[in-house]
Length: 117
Image (cartoon, rainbow, N blue to C red; front, side, top):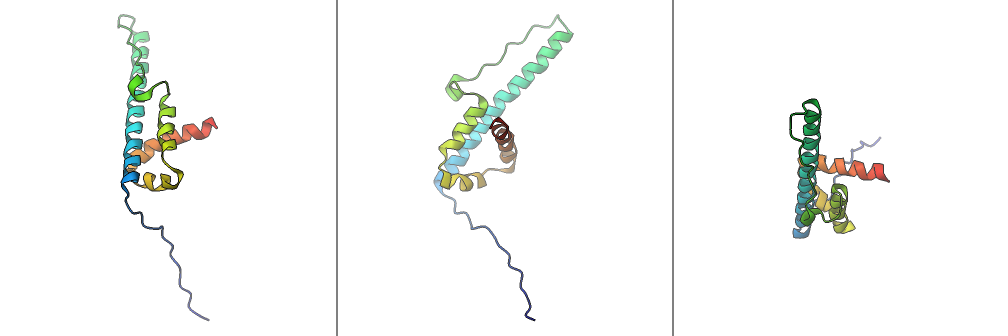
């Protein structure tokens, strides 16, 4: 019998292209903007709970979406728009440049898109 050699497959090396880096940076900016607004809404919710417990506290002002950043989109649509802008052929390469902390945040929005469908 011949000795068998295990084959190890690896992914093709990713050549950093300026377009992929740009798409990755744009997606990171979209995630930052969406997360900032999500955090403001969460803080607003906590302040509302505090106001219900103590009526003496002033009711907080509800945060509004920044029209210049989001337009008339929700935070989820904003992130989805930045994903759709990336050409399909470049999507995998662009996502490979995301740091792990951004990948975790990206998965939050991806889960929303999957549940929505």
